[in-house]
Image (cartoon, one colour):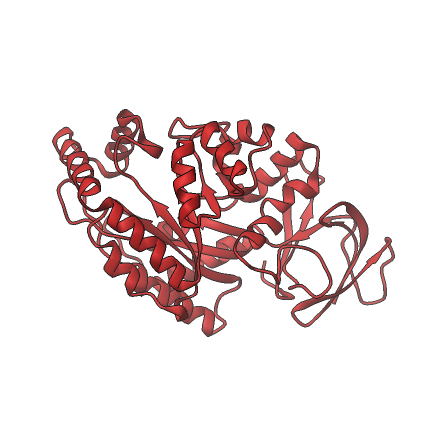
Length: 376
């Protein structure tokens, strides 16, 4: 297959040319607008690498579409998979929580290993359109983190582990009023339930927080997974994470933490919805502020898959540099997680590609290929 007469977004420039695909790989790249016989004429549309999503909660929405409704998992996974393909995401790290709570106010039951096995089984059957890896969100402030993480082995495709500490009064929810708004709005907690929930989490953190953090780091190393921190607020937290081997900083909440991450060689991930909305829904630092300061490396769609493409083009406008912006959703996340076979338009890499119409105000996805097969 040949995709011709397209503007190819290469690592360092945009070039009118054609991509030659053989099987699952890019076999060659040629310059110019010629359309060989039998080629697909892209009519000047953009061709970019398939997007790589490192942290998304989107699968939860399909599995639990309403409170108390547990939708059949295979159907939910495939719906999630198809939604991501439709917006140009060709590799996803499905974020699954490990670490459960059975205490006052609100409980979480274990689910991650069973769901990971369902995702991996569909992948092994070639039922999914795009590539799926597992991202374990290690809840430090929980009751069962260690046993849940130890249930995972090398065959579970865990490539990313995030250290998530949601102890009330620090990191994402330094402002307890913001946490109160979130819990009451999402879970309908009463005043008494919220107070009990906060007290229980704070007691858990004091009692077993350090033990859980050390275990999560150890198990991540055993699994060969990239380690990420989450919601860093201070330079001290960043330095501690760096000592653990953290390579990614997910959603730092302050400029101080983002700057410390960059100073320590840790890539900064910010939420695409934050950039599109113009700020954090939790009242933390705005992604645009970090982008303008040169402190943003990777974007994540978080809870809105379609935001990833939109935010990349928003960055392109801020930086006046389309290749640099596209790298935040392709090459940089690939490099950060050891995926050397994708993330760029280059000979010998996977033919994960997205064709975009840019004649409208927003980029419109016209076609998506994963390993040379059209999936959207």
